[in-house]
Image (cartoon, rainbow over all chains, first blue to last red; front, top):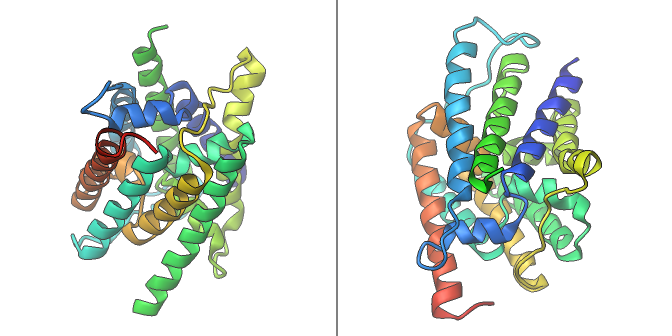
Length: 138
Length: 140
């Protein structure tokens, strides 16, 4: 049941990204290009997603626990530290270079573009590297 | 349908996916966290992560089967830049603890100070990068 619902959530997520234009890097780069021909679509996607999530979370998190698990797993970190800011900055540069953040990378894989598959592989390498950096520091 | 209305609808679906995952599994729908977690050796709960990732990959395929358009667009830069972009996205979201979905959607919806800050930072750096690439260097 857990697996089925995770699959359903992923499907909804992927369909939403695609309908919203987020699997088109030209649209994403157009949003980031505020000094050129600005494309506001990403803002509409974010607005729809954040509002829906904010309302839905309010209702859901009132319950004692999720339907299929014993507790909610919410982030507990609270520090506004250098890793958060540095990581976000590095991510932003990569996002601005290719026009891909992790969701659209996965949702675009079925397009079969060789350069996207290379981007996917190097993103996996980046995650692996980051987890080793974390362990080395800890 | 107007493209912005379609984008709003797409956003609502993404939000619905996030609420569904929280309501049932009690998890934040952060793509870098869920997919990145698959690379860790100690993860006992691999199956739901894999199922979520599979759904994400198959979603646009389903859309293509239903109305003939997957919505997947062409990459905009050459292979070496794509390789570099992927590495930066992976390292950055790995160290920063989230991406556009985990920080940008779920964290902002919870008004988490960390996520609000991260979202502001990655958006500003994305804008600055596109500015330099397009308006200083004249494209890649």
